[in-house]
Length: 233
Image (cartoon, rainbow, N blue to C red; front, side, top):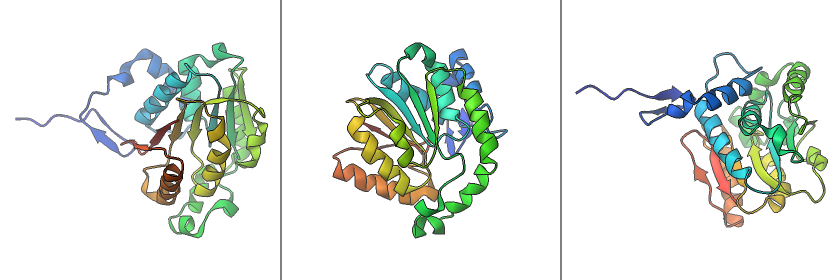
């Protein structure tokens, strides 16, 4: 009896389960926009698929969309393409990033030992990456890139604004905890909070911080085989 072939073997996930979402023309178009400006040969289709599901649920709710940690805009670009986000105005998609890597002062000693600060090698030439991201997002009039350190840059959000969707990918626990403390009270019931780094070995300190936060807030984190974590408010 021959072995069942893998249907997906990328990004730390190997499975024999059905992956026909990758052949959906709507997904193909969204993913193509998402990976614009991205690293050549990058395959994170299943992570993008999760983000699209979250965004589709959020589109039924009231509130803006927020991504903390954008870089080239893979998830956000795919989400906005998938939803035709320009048609959701006056909703806004706020995109927060330093476009200069992880601020060293936010990296704990434990995170340094896991090599988190060394990840900044991926974020060299931030000005060019920022300019390319701004060009990419210019196709959506209701997309607002905000350059600056999180959580301080979150001041760009409307004071009384509601939030329907949050994608969190800051690579460091201090910034993510500060961000969720500001965003969680604004998130409407049913809003998804997608954690990009939750299950990855190099980000175990973030996982510990999120697990403690979840216990304090009577929330449950769904650990996904993509390495992501998902909380629904």
